[in-house]
Length: 229
Image: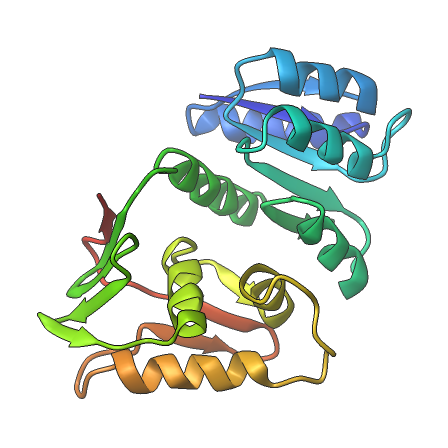
């Protein structure tokens, strides 16, 4: 399993190389946009960690060109910019995820693992979380063997949650992924549709599948044994 880091801060590269090596991942790196793009296209890498502020080509431009050559290669953007508009721009430009510096290695590792799991199952036609089962082809949803009727937007939101298990998703991330564009930050459409899903999916006496992370967004917490077929 090989990770490409496109990062011009040597201390960050050294820290990440040590951290990933301890978990069995091999890392290669580039300290500028041109070399990073070449390695992303030519090398056998499973995921790219891409800084936005780079010498030569910017991270945004590297991402754009990667998407032209390898549209399914997972890319996680690393950025010192914490403003929502920069995060939304990265996601709308094709990034699979982003992380703001400074970050903890444990969080980065968890996000990389999520991207790798998703990349290894690109053609999955069925998703399951405990007794919740989703058939992506027939658009059939069942829990405990009982059919659940969802609108097209509810279905898209549920699929997005199930493809990002245990990951905290901001409302803006969800808007960009499920609604395809950014709403007014003051909109409550995500809250409304999360409540729709909860009302249809949750069962008495069973922990809810979608947890609210106060001040941040939501997290899908499937029971143990979740799988995709």
